[in-house]
Length: 259
Image 1 (cartoon, rainbow, N blue to C red):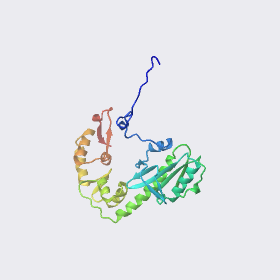
Image 2: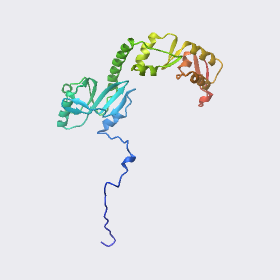
Image 3: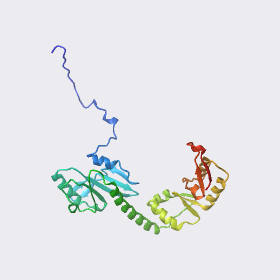
């Protein structure tokens, strides 16, 4: 025992060995395929992990993800490598769900199961990688359905538009619809305004901006004019027939001229 020492250590709940609180937002996943899904961009659909508790008969069911856009929520469940018993229970729960019409089910091709076993409409079998384009196609169908419903809703509403520059995102929030639906309806009812980006700008303001642009050359000066009137989109330059000439990499050197 010469040269060797024996140490006694005491550990209790008053002292921390690892500073776990320093990493509060680290998210863990059950599989690499779930992590891959979480990193994808779904074109305006926000992705949330394990978002809700769903009812499946007498059971509770927590989907892997939800995809949300303008008030529409779609659930996503990924079935990868599992034991036969687990898979059997999973199929049973999914078939008992009361919200199956809003569920996208991704099933690994290697599993010993087939399409008819799942009583869902949005069923995709995948091989190693997330079937990204197929998911986007399903989401587009939901977008089209939502757009049609919101347009129909707006047809029965008298939309009040006041001001020389109107932010359509505020109007959309007011009526509980998406920007695309509002723009679709607005285009049919515009009177004295022009649709520029996500704003309506009255024709008199456009004429005033046109007059002020005629006396400048710098692109940065045009931006100052837009900001003065609350114009957010540089589409105004295109609409008024201007083009931007970039001189080097410094935006301060850019100039505008009639196209």
